[in-house]
Length: 95
Image 1 (cartoon, one colour):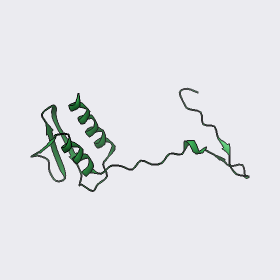
Image 2: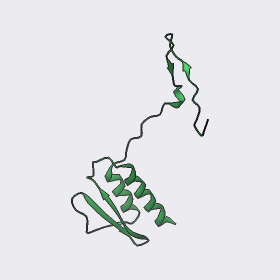
Image 3: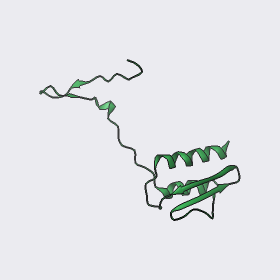
Image 4: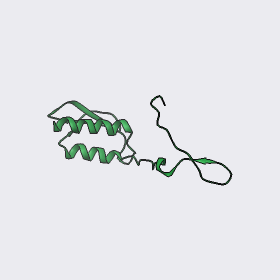
């Protein structure tokens, strides 16, 4: 199989069309909002510092080297890289 997962298909209609089983149907993930990421950072002790242009916001923490830069307005959907950046920053200050 070369590292690929086998999918067992089943016939679901009388015309012979093959359909994936319901176990493989996934519900799309709803992205978090920028305001939620900012709230997580502030709750963890990050402080907004001066810097960043437009909708860019810069946050610093005493235990975190450097800064976390969040771009976007509060109502915008957060991108995956932004969620990962905040998650990694929060993990780093906890250890």
